[in-house]
Length: 87
Image (cartoon, rainbow, N blue to C red; front, top):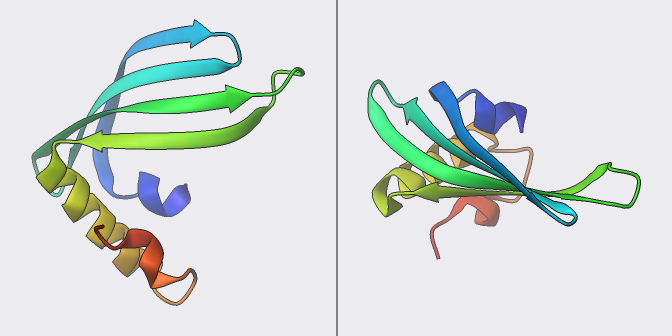
């Protein structure tokens, strides 16, 4: 999470919706000196309200691919490189 967070120049949260054990956070961001990104973060909680799963979804596709490539560079040698390659 720290590596991914370091890529953004700014993040603005727009909406929060809770449905059962899931919280949906809609956001806009800027990265790479001006590239606009948008997305949704989905937090899944357990019965005690603790976060047990996080899913971060980016758009548009080109920005998501650049973000993934940068994350792969930042994490080189610490995680399997396949985690950050486009499908």
